[in-house]
Image (tube, rainbow, N blue to C red; front, side, top):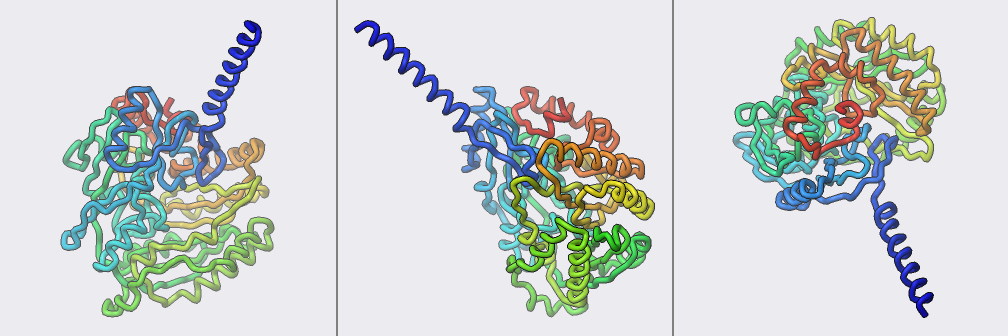
Length: 477
């Protein structure tokens, strides 16, 4: 009888231990971001179900020494929104409009709101956002945390459109931050990658919605800087601008098309176009983008179709709000072994042509590097952010790359990307931080000479490292 009792004690002890082990190791969620190269098992996902709930999450983390990360739409691609073993706070439910003053052209929203939420709220009043990404799917808190830029060439950076925000600090206190109040934190939190606490809500300056006529032109990359300076920057009627460089083998990094958004002569026509456009069926562009992933022929075909499609749009009209609602569905990509990642490089306007010539040589020597797209935008000089990527007037080159997920494939991409970064730095350029940690620490320091100052401020505000992510663990430690 004693042996049976002992056996049962041991059995149930082992069963309990197994159950505990399962709950600890197998019930923890595995998350990843848009790049899908850094899957990680985290402790838990907590929903941002209100300000008091957020305060409780931070309080509990301080009591139990938990690490916290902050997530919105998770389109950053270097693990900036999560970390192994940390509690990830999902900000998407925290998305209310707190205050809206159409006369003052100001709106206050919780940080989980998207640009789409704002557009739907302000569009009936004839108002629009000043600066945002080229797509409206992202959260406001996320956009501030990576200090975004977009197609607008007249409103500086996103930072310049922010009047103030409230910050839930790592110690659990809430402060108001602006250029006048707690101003020392303004230029760290914007572009701070969620490392200084939780942005609760943000007050943004808005602008008038306007009607633009699109002008599309094909030009050589060699002529682009002069075209931009004379026909775009010096023409106050051009309010937005973007361009694309060919990645097709037949015209690789030589052909471009540009799109200028010129203020329409007759603003009375605005009302005909104010209805917000929605995502359409995108089967055809999705099909041809798919072909371009796997062959040079496909890239040539896709580039030809892009040029034809854009040429037909020349002369058409679109409101400011709708220009900022670019379609993204056709870029959705699912593959078990491959993924698509972004890189973004900033090059001084005066260095563009020579840089492209050297970039072409570099990439033609690395045929396996599968480059799908290069979009070009303009970013005006801005030194307000501690981690400014535009120390002078720059062209921003956004690269879409198809690559494998294996360690070997990641290493191959890293080799080419570090070469591109060296070239970018050689031409006094910089790169954008919210992507995979391919850059070396040496490259980071050269591109962002104030990075150590940034990390020191992080340690001052968050000495217990309550908030963290892959970016900070890779470079800040």
